[in-house]
Amino acid sequence: MKTCLTALFLTFCTLPLFSFANGDTQEKEAFLQAWESKQKQHPALEYFEKNSDATYNIKFKNIPFEGKLIVLNYDIESFQDFGEYLPVSKSGYIEYDLPELSDDITEKYYRSYSNWDQSNFLYFSSQSNTWIDEKEYADLIQDFDYDYDEGLMYYLSDYVGYILFVLFIYFVYSIFSNNGRTKKAIQIQELAFKQSMELSQESLKLQKYAIKKSEDNHEKTNILLENILNELKNK
Image (cartoon, rainbow, N blue to C red; front, side, top):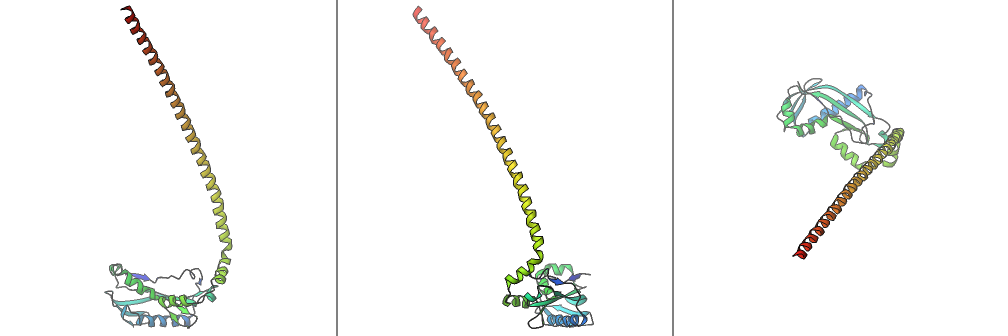
């Protein structure tokens, strides 16, 4: 049996801002009805029909699957603190199971399946007081007049301590890291100087040897010339 959990994701501005307190029964039922309506109108589905309280008959258009969808759980999460700065006040999710759906199909039709799976996560619009899907939420965010400066500062004020702590750790790390690099650079320079001195001494030895060798050869040449001159004189 393949259990498929909905993709529970929010945009960067809502990730840490929701409460996990369960919604009341009336809210949850309203959300479930909105989800059922969205599924019946979803362009990826051939049909979506309720069979019992938690079981539905479903058929996809672009995915070779027709069978049962079982709702395992559903709930609502309310946004806290930052809700006044957003065009939505809460979100709802559906956890479901497609017991007859194989892994092979979800792998082959991954993108089509993922696009449909996102419809199992809805937002509640504070402006229209209706449940909207991800595409509608993206359009709403784009047109929303959001006070970034005030909202961002309000949000970051709760994390000032953490930010300062991270900056302090980075500062200390930089000091030790720079000291380590400085020591290493000095060691490299000392090693290079030592090697340079050794090469200079070796070069000096070779020069002295070459000079001595040249002097010996010059002396031998003078003796040879002197012998030749003496022989010529004797003749």
